[in-house]
Image (cartoon, rainbow, N blue to C red; front, side):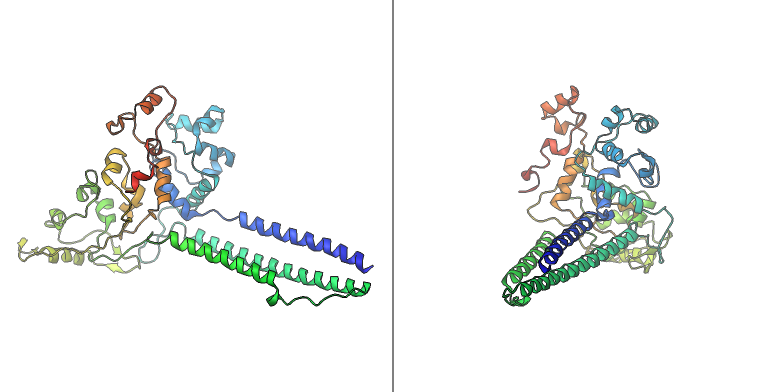
Length: 424
């Protein structure tokens, strides 16, 4: 009798353990999409043709999932719009005709997870007009990040509950085995305490080793990276006012970006070309990232103090001293990056690497500038290949474009992912 009960309970015990493992696996896989990662992918791949809430070269992306009848078809459209058009899908062909039969760039390297992250970012961007107290713009995916935090907490609680259930079942199984042995008259040794059991100790050591190794690797990968780094500068210089509101071209100040390896920090003389005539600030209110209001006129006076300019006398009255700007974007010494090659030959826009710079009062590092981020850009970015003399040596690829074997050429196809391209 006891033996049959024991066997039956063992089977139930195994079934419960399998169920617990399945639940843990399900919760592990069904993680929410990451709008933060989607923002990076959106800026790298989509921002040149799309905005979230307004029509540019392509349609506004807000509500795009609701407009497509099938999410799988939307994923296929993003990877290769031509295949969807060829299938005869009515919505895809109507969209193609609506935008003057301008083909959408194909992104075959984007995974389903990448596309879901992009869509999560698109869904998280609020309608323009919302702002936080103090004048700072609302974080477009702060709410989503908070939801992700709640999901992680829920996953942790469920995992803990399942672990407790598994321990209880193991104890029940042990007690039943003991009862069955006593009933049959078999001598049963007392179980080894948990803290003395070599198997349990070994399992705990392995688990701690794996967890410690994971965090060690993650920390090592992040060494030297400073995404979102926003240092306080000696003068509050607003790119939003200069490049955004006043529409000053980036190359006016960073004139060497299309001619040199470095984009160059402009000299004070470049600033004074305008500020000899502009001594007072009369634009919209300025705020620091902490929400503190900034006196724009006082910041202009700091510039005058550095260059020795007397606005009342209209001339330089004392020797100048350099402005000690804090550098934001840094690459390791073993990495080679040439601004001119990207800006002049590659036609890469400033926003691709620097984010929405024309909307920043205080500049921060937009991208993590990791090797993976750069390589992903090289894999997906199409170059103006046919009419670009810089790539004239690639005769085979030119012929492939002319013969229709390929519709475009990516940076990767011209050696953009070879190690020596970026590493000395």
